[in-house]
Structures are given as C-alpha cells and as structure tokens.
Amino acid sequence: MVIQKNSDIMHKTLIRSMIRKLESENYTVQADHIGYNKEVKEEWGGEKPDIYAYKGNNSKVFIEAITKDNINSKDLKKRLEILSGKSEIEFWIITTKDFLDELKNKLKEWNILYDRLFFFEE
Image (cartoon, rainbow, N blue to C red; front, side, top):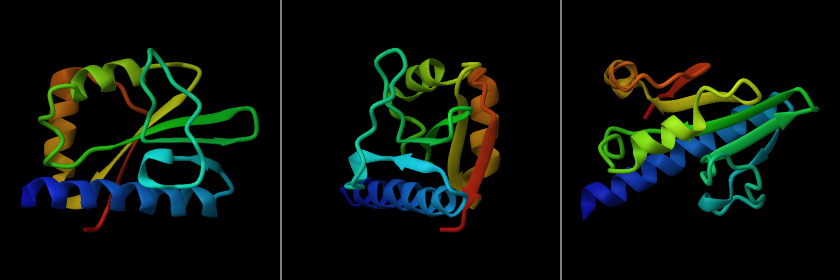
C-alpha cells in the first residue's frame, strides 16, 4: 500500500511540475485527474493523456507521466501505443531523473514513438 501511495504522489508531482513548465511557456494546459481545474477534452482512441497542452492552433501536445512503479501497469503499453506516433499531436513523456535510462530502454523495447522526454528531480 505504501508503494502505491508513493507512486501516486510521484505521478501527481511530475504532472504538476510539467504544468508549471508549460504555463511558464504560455501553453494552455488541461489536466483534470489531479484536481487541476481544467478538464482534458482531447483524446485519441478513447484514451485521454495525463496532460493536454496547446499554444495557438499549431502546437498541440499529449503528455504522459511514467514512474518506476507504474511502468509495469497492465494497460500502460497499450495506452502509450494509442497516444504516440500521431503527426497531428506531439507526444511527450515525463519521468524522474533516476528512472530516465530504464524508461528509455523500455520505450525502445515497446517501440513507442515520442517527440520529447523530460525528467524532473524527485
């Protein structure tokens, strides 16, 4: 139970850190499942990203937060396959610095296409 609670806290912390970064770069941000005040309306294949951000009409981004605890969730690979590799919307991934190399290897193994990979300190 402690692992799940810590994982959930880290997942939300990553999302909040990315929201601050995006808003400082003048993106409009939607991230409803963390209690952020804007509902994510964009989806692809029935999946809503952790964060949807856009700037004007040309820059649209789906963003997923991945931690070492949620990398093994049974639905993550399918979710990433659905959200990644779309020419109309960039796909970014955020994680923690200590998990970056392992995550890169897993994404390569799963053949997940992404545009940018960010990390934040724990």
